[in-house]
Structure formats: structure tokens, C-alpha cells
Image 1 (cartoon, chains in turn green, cyan):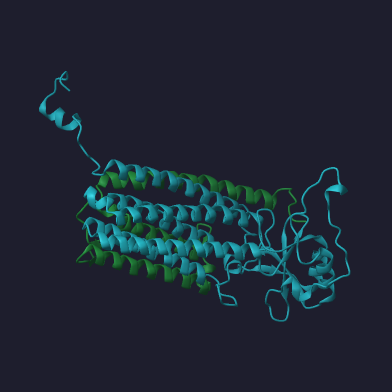
Image 2 (cartoon, one colour; image 1 turned 30 degrees about the horizontal axis):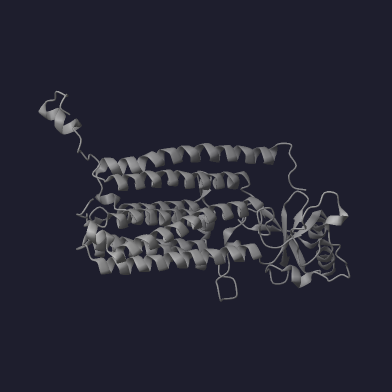
Length: 127
Length: 324
């Protein structure tokens, strides 16, 4: 069990005096990120919904990146991955990431292919 | 180990007692479970992505589906889910505070924080039940075409969605109840709507300011609104009235949306529920002093890992169901 805690986040930019303080700090950070997400989701700025990157709206990329940021801080500070030994942390993090990326790649490409079949192929689906 | 001849170095590496990962057996197994569960949830979410990319131009817009807040009338997209997310993050914080208090062997503080965590979890599960009930009950009502596409109605003057009750006529129709004696093969009646298809179609024809909105998303990222002439032609394709959502019909749009909504948020809600149950068990163990006698609160840490994982999953469900 890791009894001693690493008390800095953002690569040492923010330092805390105790673990309890760090927890509240992370909560504030997560709340800010969630607020930004919700605000963007309600406002939906035109600049972000009408520009695309890799076939997806810029706004959606922002949502996904912010989600990964939140996931990082939940795993690192709430689930104490920051305090675990490096090999354990790597095993826990990289194994699923590798498998999930593979799954996303395969299924989304396949889905896009089917979308094109529906669109351009001789299939009537809307009558 | 008497029979093995070993040198000193081998002894220290292979002789047992090493903990290269510095984690206890129980914690390790919790991580194993969490990883496999993470892959399960990823499978669900990627399957959702698959169906969504397949029907990318028809997919319902979440902002238009989840617009209600308990005790308030009106159109408030996202606010309630944001609240639910905040509750879950908050209960994650009290959980991690409980773990922290456990490290310091402060029993009464662990009890307090575990209690708050359980309350947060209960609020979340309750909110999800409410969200489901609202989704199942439905909002405005719609009609389904022969191919299973959904046609919704919009008031041309205000631009707002029109409910079936706003324009449907009440016709002197008699509904023939299907009973067992009427057929060799009897199937239950199942789904009943407040208006018959005929009443909706007649009402639509008689009310000139009602337009049809199809599932198709246009370049502006909004659902396509037909003009009156197109609407009158389109209504002829209608095949049945849909109110609310279930596994077969969904008034909000594509039926797969409802299927995935029930399946993924249901599976997550079940995790939250079981997390609350496990938390309650640990809570009573803390009160009884089990971990005080054991000398460490690792059980709190392990159940905490599970609880944070549930929060972690919600962060992704929130993004992919409500935001993206």
C-alpha cells in the first residue's frame, strides 16, 4: 500500500501541503472542466461546429480530449495511480488503451463503410 | 526449499516474498476486475459509436432528447445530467477522503465519508431512474413510417415542437380490442397510444400550421424541416403513432439510440447500484471496527477503486451520450 502521496499535479505546477488538500484541488479542477464541457454543449459555438478535423467536428474533439483529461485525473489522483509503482501503472493503463484503440479503429471504419453502402448503394431504407 | 541448491542472489529474486508491483493480492485482483470491466464498457461504447457512424445523418441530437429537469417545466438541455455528473464526482471525492482517513486510521472520519459516498450514490441512482422514466414516457409524440423512420411535428409559427395533443383530432372511432377468442394465435396487445394514426393524420391535414420534421440532419447540424406540401406528402408514409421510447419504438429518432441508452446507462446504473451495496457493507464493517482490529483499511481502498471506476465510466458515458 502506498502510504506516501505525491502531492503535485500539472507536472509540479501546483503543489499541495497534504493529500486532503490535493483531493479538493483535483475536485475543483474536474468541476471546472465539466462546467466548460456543459457550457460548450449548450452554447455550441458556430466556429467549432462548422470546422472539422479527421471527419469529426472540432467541438466533439474538444469534448473527447477534455474527457480524457478528466479520466486521467480520476485515475491518477482518485485511484492513486500516481502513487503506484511505474510497472503496475503502465500495465493498467497501456493494455486497455491499446485494445480499445484497435477496437475503435476497426468498428468505426466498418461503420463508415456501411454508411456509404446505404448512401450510394442500391438499398432503399427510407420509405 | 531444502532440496534446491541456490545462491544468494537467486534466493532473493525467486525465493518468494518479492512484491515487484508493490500491490497486495486483493488490490491487484480489483485492478484485474476493473480492467476487464473497462474493456466491457469500451465494447458497449464502441458498439454505440458503430451504430452512430452507420446512421450518422439520422442520429438523434441528445440536446433535444434530454431536456427536462425535475420540478421545473420548460426546455433545459443538459443541466440535469451535468448535475448528476457533479454528484458522482462529489461522491468520488468523499470516497477518496474516506480512503485517506483510513490510512490515518481515523475510524469516525471513515464512517462519515463512507456515509456521504453512499448518499451521493443513492442520489445518482435515483436521478438515473427519473431520467429513464422521463425518457420512456416521452415528450411530444411522433409517427413512424413504414421503414421505421420517425416523423416529428413542428409548429410553423413558433418554430417549436408540436405535441400530438396540439393538433390531433378526436374521431368517433371504436377501438376493437384483440382478445384470445378472436384468433388462433393470440398475441398480447402491447403498445397503446393516446391517439390513433387516423386521428393524428386527420388532425395534421386540418391544421395548416403544423410541419413535419424528419430525422435527416442537414448541413447546419439540425433536423430537416419539410414545408407544408412536402409534409402532406410525407404523412402518407406514416404507419403508426409512437409515444415515448422502448426497445422497439422510439419517438426521439432512431430506435438504436433508445436501445443503447437503456443498455449502457442501465449497465452503468447497475454498477452504481452494486457499488452502493458494497459501500454499505464496508460502511457497516467500519462501524463495527473490523478494519480497526485488522490494523489497516485496505478494504476501503479496494472498494474505493471500484467506486472511482464507476465514476470514470460515467465520465465517458456522459461525453458520448450527452455531449458529442
